[in-house]
Image (cartoon, rainbow, N blue to C red; front, side, top):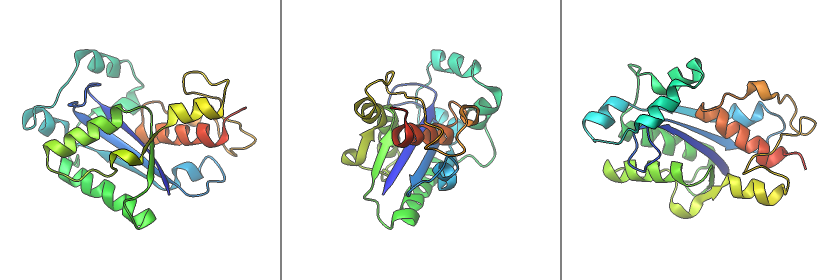
Length: 192
């Protein structure tokens, strides 16, 4: 019972505006496509967070977003009519987790602690239940560094012989689902 979670935001502070969340459930993956088969993408209402919740935006983060791939940027950054309020987003995350494991008790890999802090802060501010509690989180960077001594700051090449159908050009950096997929592939199928 393992999940990978990634968020995109408008700041690196825990009070950041949360743009989007990607979460994938890993159940004995055999190839690259299996790593995203059980996935969820959630786009949150940034304007509501800015105006009503007074969540933070950093100019440097907005400037960074303007340099990212347009398609990926639009997916998380651009407002859409079906963007979710925090309550709806948290309900959807918890339901996704429960639907796959029948329990909220599962491990969740994130890249560092920023994602966890932003989600917990937004949940606390809006009186929502977090999808994972503090002792369920694991750091994917640390795990990769331990498993793969030649890793580069938590990154390792994916072994294409072990992860069938993997192609580096299928990874869309800063798309939260794709980032989760890559983290899972590196952790499970990294080159030694």
